[in-house]
Image (cartoon, rainbow, N blue to C red; front, side, top):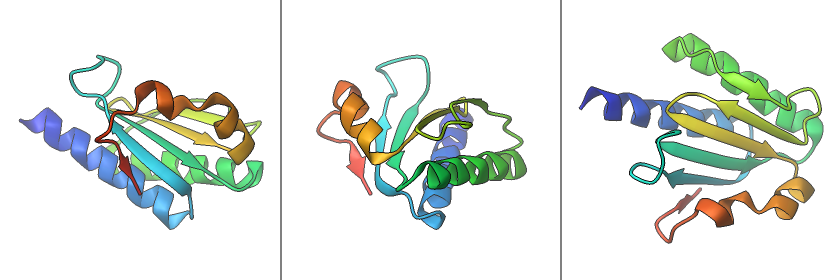
Length: 116
């Protein structure tokens, strides 16, 4: 199933990029069979607006370079909550206080969600 392999590769690259950029409390949620919007949701925290913006920028560069994916992005200028739509995966990057406030993963997380 080539779409699944591509989706898994995209997720692996996202997780690798976030790890390289010292993202904290990274959670990946498998959305397959639950929604048509994406196969995966990734949620991660940066210590500051500057780090959140830098993580987003690096991730966008890597996805474009490695897969030719041009992502839709919201919130990069403010750096409080950056939403990156990479097609197969949706990535949410937060500052800690903003993530605590919205608790986004509680809406989607199932017991099998993977915390990294």
